[in-house]
Length: 58
Image 1 (tube, rainbow, N blue to C red):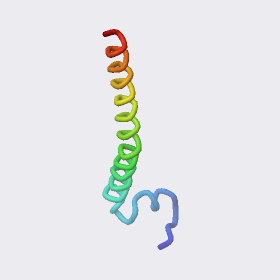
Image 2 (cartoon, rainbow, N blue to C red):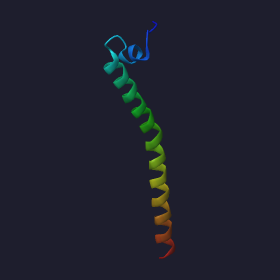
Image 3 (cartoon, rainbow, N blue to C red):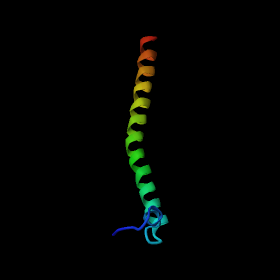
Image 4 (cartoon, one colour):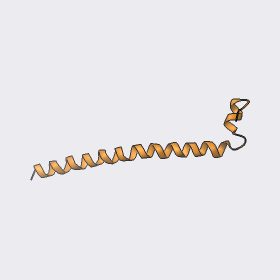
């Protein structure tokens, strides 16, 4: 499929809002799939460090 102009490309034959929102949602899901484990790991390491400090102070 070829487009005559960039605006035609963005419009995607009047399916643009569906197509671009699907791409946007997909990118958000992919970003969350990367970010959530990193944040969980950081939180786990902080909790473990806190637990080890508590045990060392007993």
